[in-house]
Image (tube, rainbow, N blue to C red; front, side, top):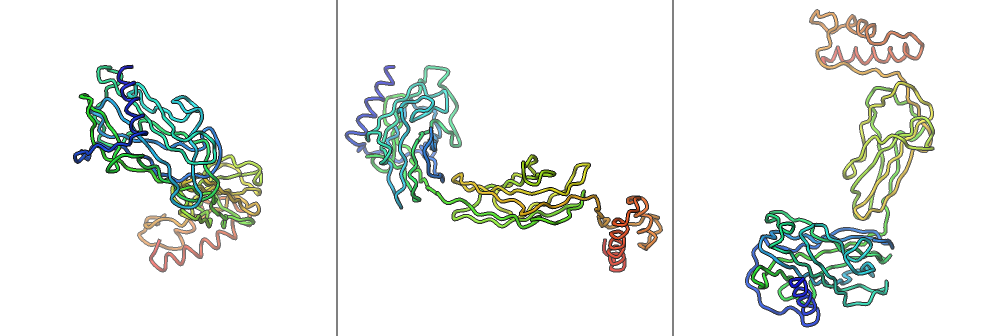
Length: 353
């Protein structure tokens, strides 16, 4: 506890007096990085969390992070969570067991209508095996701030150092000396605008043959950018419930190659596409009407198609192939077989598969 109270006092001094000590050039491996991200407006417990990353914690006993929240554009701001303590549902949460003690000091009274400035003070016990870990060569999340209000207006917010010289924050080493570190401020973009999405194919009335590949397509856009796309299928209920996720895609490719499976046909299927942006805004669209899943699937064979092994592509190969693969003789199959034969003849006489 002695170390903790020492850092507690240092945190108070940072907020009240500022941190004006001149530092030497910091080791580039030593960094405090505030997460930058997009969020949507709202109220929650929490509404949004922002992580703090620390690198190269090899000789430190304490860290003090004094942050000032400022509105860069618009009327965007966040209000720190309440109660303001490191518990579930509070203002800050520890993400590693190496933090043996922590306290938060808020310079603004909680009122849900204005930005907050605050300081986090925490320490590591170097003589406690539970607090030891190797130096972090890459960023590692140590704790996160929890905000329960994000103002509804769009805009940008910066979480920057409060009254700390040279854009740096405070580390304390084993000799109780201040250690200079690099500080990376966090920029939060508040985005209240949901993406737009429209399913274009299948959109109703199509016959989708199985097990042939079929390309599902959609049009989607967002004011910032779409990050994920989910494609769902309701096979038999006409959009009552989408029980099968066909794809979970990164970005917005605009299409997905789907090979229908299953052992039964359907005349009442629909596709639903769900899109999300980086802030967590979500929109969806489904086929306007039902489409059918049918069994009439004819796949052009690959190069080297020579059923009778005579070294020649001919109508004989087509007939043999049809005999082997498609043995039913209902009228729809015969009609589609004619189209398939035409396609095969074109392929044969053009010397392409």
